[in-house]
Length: 167
Image 1: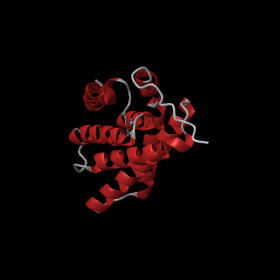
Image 2: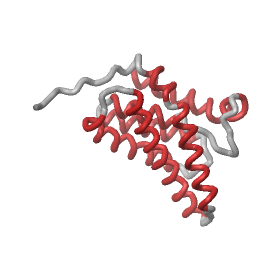
Image 3: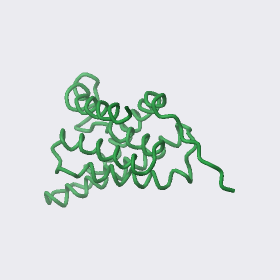
């Protein structure tokens, strides 16, 4: 059931990002859009086991790759890496407040957007540092602005995992 919800969510977000969101909701600010896939990947990585979180990252990344003009596999590799890192480190810092998720989304968005900008700049041999910094910063802020929405929507489907105290 969880995978049906996640695949449907990925397709819905892909349609929302490519058709409705940039035009009607004012989400396109100088060519910068928020990443709606990343908060869901982070949310699932904080709530699921490591293998399941990496599969969610793969599904979200592939959905993003299918509907973007970037090289195939770019977003899926970053999303799987982010899901693995967050899944490995969640025992250290996660106990279900929204502020923790927003901080993780902020860091993950900086890594994702900065890494994608470097890879695309090296691939096409064209990079304008000031423009790239502006797009990374503004895209991260826009992603951070929409990050609470999946937290409150998916909180019903994925209750927080209670970790055993080993001390």
